[in-house]
Length: 438
Image (cartoon, rainbow, N blue to C red; front, side, top):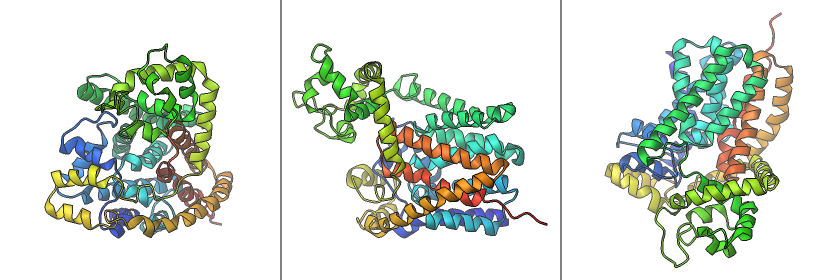
């Protein structure tokens, strides 16, 4: 009973920005995930996973259900991680850990946000527990973690390479000595891949992990330069659709994908292209493959530079404004929920455009906490043994991998860093050497 109350209290601490806002935090893409079940609509650029997760907790009643669920899931994972790494978890210690994460890190700005970003730390902690803490978990807890991590990996395509990379890290940390634990880590990866193949086959008629993902990769490579150089060198002989726009490249990746007048969304004659990113995918895949063959070192340099930029970008703010709310989110809430829920959305600080200015002053404090945590975590890992050592190295690898995947393959964005960087300060408390009894 006390443990359950502590987990629930920790969850409420971890979603405090939603209470401050007066409503769960939303991002422009949140409307798309809501539309997946409220439409229903199979979106070309998003896995059909997180939308059903939201629906499982809101049932067209209120979006407070999903945000509380996210807080409870994250709080419970922190409880299990304490129990595994420190040998036990007490309600008071758990509340202290959640309060630190809530007040000193960026954790609550992912937990209170209705986006699959919250599953990045869930995947990391869940894989660690399955691989390194299985002996301290019950059979039910292990089964629950497999299901949860499977959901988390499938919810965002960036989580799949992150999970695969962490399985490799587990091998380097000598987990190969325990085949059952390594298989427990790999099982969610296999199940998530299967879920993506099945949902894409049903929704898009294509048995693929990401039927139209090449368009996103091309957007990144043309902004960085290698794909643009290839297009200009091969056109017009290549006969690609983008040859007509070679003089306009490169352009910012977001503009390339989403701007109404971009080559993706408006053709050379000025006619709109409905689902232009989806239509471009076959050609994009060809151009990406040609770019990788023609200039692999240029691509690698660009990815490394973007990854470094991502490592230094983990502030809050890019998910706190009301950009595109009137087009992407408000119609979804008006369509699927009661007038009372719509009024609550309209009255929230975020919808009124005042939330960002109120909370972004926390950025310097969050930066200071991470900078102080880095040497402390290094010392704690050096002094630590067993699971504390493994946790510190595992989380450090997760932060580096997240920067390489999100910054290198997409674009450096603060929310990509904010969703996972908070694990490092929290790891200091989890890995700190305990005083031995005389």
